[in-house]
Length: 214
Image 1 (cartoon, rainbow, N blue to C red):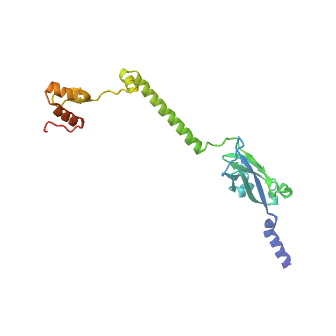
Image 2 (cartoon, one colour; image 1 turned 180 degrees about the vertical axis):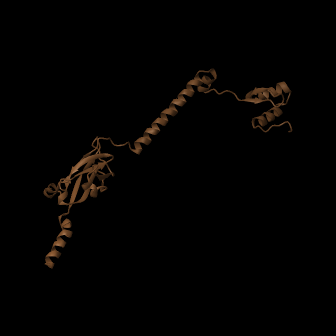
Image 3 (cartoon, rainbow, N blue to C red; image 1 turned 135 degrees about the vertical axis):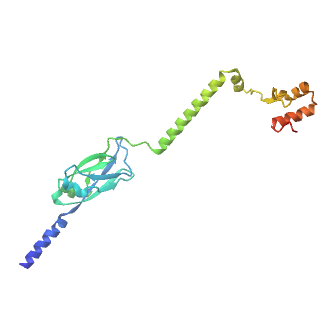
């Protein structure tokens, strides 16, 4: 009698372990344009109120560079036909645990491909290139507008073809504003200075070092 009791206890405690088997889901995840969903997680979720699914909740697998993924679960025979949700990038996909299909599969797994309704996000390289293009267009338009404003005036049109407006200097003797190339002549004619003195004063004014104290 004692032996029978021990055997019965062993059967009760170890029967779940004996009936549990590895259940594998594999497939390929793609976007709406058929490009692979690379390096992202496929998660197991449950419908609200489906308490039998909670033991698998949070199980995840990362897709590779080609969008391929493999999820491994420990499923009991009693969970055959249980519905779970495969979640990827906020979208849910129903999956029914089918132990018989896995056993008869040559790959040793149940195949379920996932195709999202969303398109892939723009890559950082593309966004960076787009920012460069936008910046170039803004700079080009700004230069074009400034050039257009310059061409509306006579001085601007002269500068555009290569002529620059002469610099104006203040005469240190009379504070009159004189064109730079005429300051020497102004000092000689209007202030009776020698040519060398006029040239020296003009040089000091141009270097902004002249003062009344010198």
